[in-house]
Length: 411
Image (cartoon, rainbow, N blue to C red; front, side, top):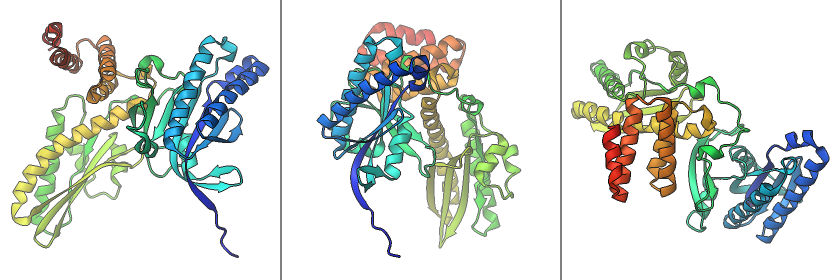
């Protein structure tokens, strides 16, 4: 039997979903259906006027196809703005916001329908958007960034349902628009995070395996691992599993992620020392224990005669890098938790995320998160340090002297 040849094409897919549709149907099903049809008609007109095509309506969801990613993002923001204005004037029984996920890639064409992995990504990203929000994949972002008067807020990397590879996502928003990172605009439909998401992260450093065959080098991997433990222990916000607990797994057969779960550590650092000719190579990996996903890796190469230099360089550099990588991973994680469930350390992580973006809107959001952390724990030295740094930076940028007074107050 000859293999069937499917027709494929490059397209940008919009997955569009009504938020709270079932709840409105329970209040008044006829009015809810009429409200949905009214909004679906508005969405269809905006998409078609921008060169798009609707190819699916199922229940309270719609799908649209665009040949140009720029047109797709522009249309999504346009109909979301129109829907927001429409809902602002509507009674509670007709107030129906939508959320949008956008992805660009290769799709299968069959009649008037589109199928494939890239269609599914758009549908999964839609679930990460807030009401009236638009979330785009990194693939779409690469095509449109800098070509539209649109601000993009990086949301981090998501492990999407039934997707083998994580997907990096961005929120698209009109300049000056409150973003998904604004606590006041977080969707209430998000389910409360489980205990594991709210728990402060910890990291376990496993003894580095010596695979050189030279027992005289056993000390090297252990020494580097101990240096990392000591260095990371100085970061008060990041609990580190003791070396004594980690060493019990040195000869075990468990994979690092399973070891992390046994130790109660969210992140696990492992490494191995190998030899090629007269070179020593140290390969280090950090992964999440919950899913085994590698979030960072690095190699260090030195001549065998410079084993001590390898110890010194790797130890110092790894302490500096790993703390930052854990912080970035936790910043991304906070976007998956309703803002009211964020604990003090998570509020600080979200604030640091916005500080790193250095825009006026993000700087204001950073202060909001730091102030929320201060209200929760006004005696925390870490909270006071973040507030002191925020006011110092603002004083440096704005030259307003009262910020320096605040810096001294919190320092």
